[in-house]
Amino acid sequence: MLGLVLSTSSSSEVDTPDHASDLELPENNTPVPPVLADDSKSPPILPVGVKFKTLKLGRTETFYEAMRNSDVGHSDIMSVVKACKPYRNLSKVRKGDTFEIALDENEVLHQLRFDLDDQESYILFQRKDPGSFTPFELTYPVEHNTVAVSGIVNISIFESLKDLGAPSALAAKMNDLLGWDIDFRLDVRKGDSFRIIYEEIKRDGEFVRTGPIIAAEFINRGKRYTGYRFECEENKISYFNQDGESLEKQLMRAPLSYSRISSSFSYRRFHPVHKRYMPHLGRDYAAPV
Image 1 (cartoon, rainbow, N blue to C red):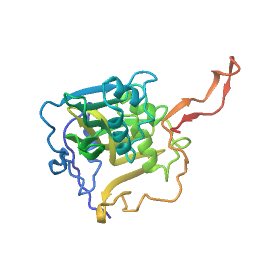
Image 2 (cartoon, rainbow, N blue to C red; image 1 turned 180 degrees about the horizontal axis):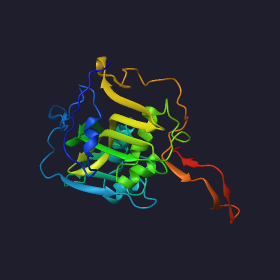
Image 3 (cartoon, rainbow, N blue to C red; image 1 turned 60 degrees about the vertical axis):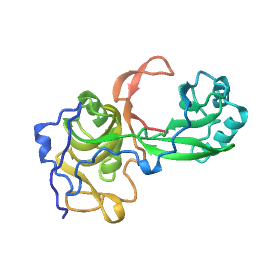
Image 4 (cartoon, rainbow, N blue to C red; image 1 turned 30 degrees about the vertical axis):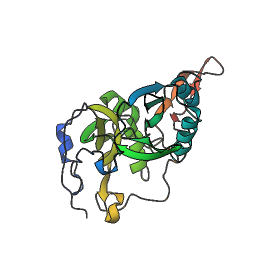
């Protein structure tokens, strides 16, 4: 059996129910302090007179065009594109992508910076020698808050989380955690209940993303299923149930990680193709592709 104890941290937009306090947590799941950038990996100070400029790509605009429109030279552009290759293909950009550049008074490029996909870190490429840029991976100061939410299923766990104002991403995370034992497409019934303690990541007070589930409970037709996040040897993260049994099994009962119901069971649903009302004797789920 795992030694379990409750441990929570600061508040969130989602209210913490009074009865959520008896959902136990693994002993070593203490609140995570803010993560700060490692100053030892910070880039050298830029030359005096360098000015920063933000580039936000317009419709059909390429990275090269945006840089040239900011008077960056061809050789500098090609050099920084080459340096970026292991991290990002700058030939594949989209409208709204944002980059920050640093230019001196002669329009020489000294630095390129952009956020990474996790929204908690960023990478910058700083000029080292003519035609050479060195990458630095840095982290924003972020907060990791422990949040609790609980509810009763009406249509689906996705809809219930949405009604509670909780992140819909928790539905997919619950499916990943307990999908070994519960088919969240077919087994869930109205009146089932859930309790979830999870991590929420914020930056500058703004929500960034939903972190991992720390502890969860789902009661399906009277049967209780639980999952607890636990740090094992060599910092490996695993999940166990209340009996200390690993939840890492070979096959999930539901092969897809669904995120929401796209069409519910109905005897009178407007058919999008036939353009008339017809019975829809099933339930469709939307899943990421």
